[in-house]
Length: 339
Image (cartoon, rainbow, N blue to C red):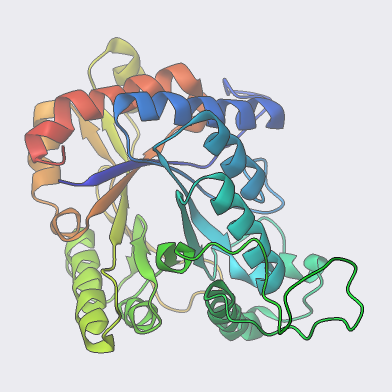
């Protein structure tokens, strides 16, 4: 059995897109989560990018989804810690989790190349790209510390409202949220670091190119390294591991028109901005269900993970994405033992 979620970028584009405005993107993101819950999908996850025509700060969207659903997990993949104030972030996400009745699954990390140069500087952080890498990790650890609920703030001698004596913590407090934080790792070393600090592991459709092996084999090694490090760390709860896949079943003429040609059906190696080491990008899985069942069944990283996120082409609108997810849940997931 697997937890199955979808991952949306929430794109909108004026041209060549069904989704043309920010309002439409946010409204359809909520609608897709509602329909996905009806299909038995376990999670609605959203990418977070600043200065882009897609989902920005995720908390209003997550709260809106929580108000319209009752079971589905609501996640991020991922919040870029280069931009975040850990205190404000902790308050925002705990408030969201209270509204969502403990369904938030918050993915965090250093983030990816952005739309603007050193975008975090516009958020008030005057650091270079090289300096911000370590700072992002430090902020994540401070954020985790705040989620533990330890009281640290000296109370005012004459507070505005009555309160119990002693130090104060951030409110509203969500006691289990600290166990639902995920680190987006790109390498084995980063996966081990996440395990040591008690964060679940999320691994995308790209990882550092650390051997000549196929993408899914390298990613599986990353997940195994995480699990080994978790055992050594001795945390008091079981971790979760997640991988993302682009899966495009071909069951209609429209599917064939959209995805049968020109898609990346082989792993590729390249370089991300500011990265000195190469990255391997996992292929898209495109084909009829029987073919996809065979290919996905041979994917070592999927076998290692307990959760799989399916990237959805959000610019094609709700109806098409419901069709895609329904096909996967009906024609593929049962045959693979995911459901």
